[in-house]
Length: 343
Figure 1 (cartoon, rainbow, N blue to C red):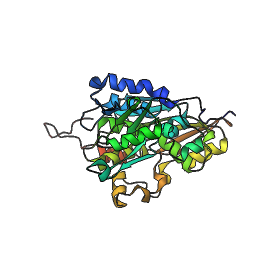
Figure 2 (cartoon, helix red, strand yellow):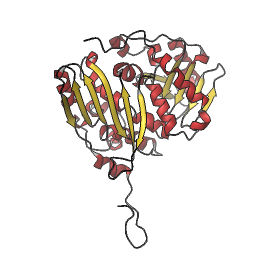
Figure 3 (cartoon, one colour):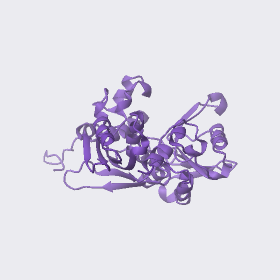
């Protein structure tokens, strides 16, 4: 079969350029703010000093995927929905969209001496990663983007200092006015949306961790419940992780039958030692150190994997909506007459 790995002529930065432009042009309607450095770099504030919103989060999620994914919010208030609002994602270029662009793999930091104040740290995600190609992952993918514009997303609660912006420009070989940086704190609405929209990316990353040949992956779709943001940063991070680990569903199409069976068995988060507790509690128990948490936990709750070789689909894992409901939902209020509201 032909290769599923990214062809070099596809530019994730070119494909996502119009999405960055929409963020800037419609900032007021999206409840975000745009500022520029003295040299002209555009900084999109989607939740630091602004309200932001779901629509901004969807646009940023699509930007993160290098313009190679569909992201939408489906609302359902029918009887017994899984959750009122669900994020839905699809890509026909899962390796490039998810690992070559969306994955938060570029470590960007500065000391307090460099910033003149507080130290700064963020993991950069989005298409500009492929311009810099600082991560070994790009050697495995055999891909590096070449374009004169770039966009990067930072999941952090303050705007990046100039020293970090200068590093991005230098590593991406961009003129200052050709770079857009979107900042989405996890505790913001837009930040929550763009993290939950990583449900397919989480599955692709674990597929890579399992050592499966990425050339096997052909299509990817997924969904996860969209929780309300929590004002506390740790709780907000916990909610977005829980949405995927306990409420995320992914459907992958792969080439080989053996790969499909293996992924159905090994992908789900329930394989992890630390499965079964809210992520914020797990994070706290390991002294806020991600690297002590069982890496197998970072996966969707439920998967279906279809094989092009056999035409069969294999299923693994299960949702744990009871855990999410306990964490996110308040008890039904008591109304006049002593009865609870709702059904």
